[in-house]
Length: 88
Image (cartoon, rainbow, N blue to C red; front, side, top):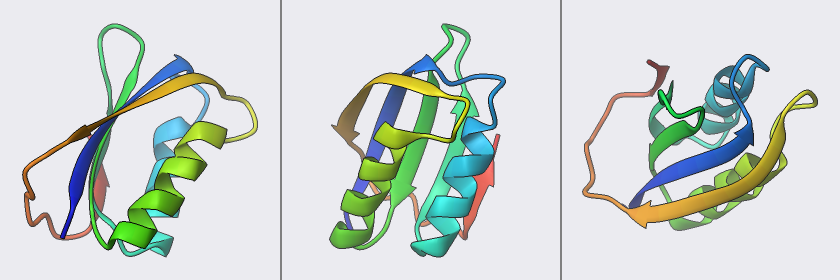
């Protein structure tokens, strides 16, 4: 299965962004995690079916109502075989 790291820039901390990602990932059966980074970005590590990851990336670019996403950088990642999706 493909796996990616996404680095989400913008107003994405303190607005429920990680919980938004959790709900989307669980609905799409994607495993991995989301965490805040010290520089204000959110990192999302995701592994799953290619079509599900494509849909997740679309949702990452939209974000929840109070977020303002300015960019999303995607980097290929080695599969981690996480069980489920978590917030760190």
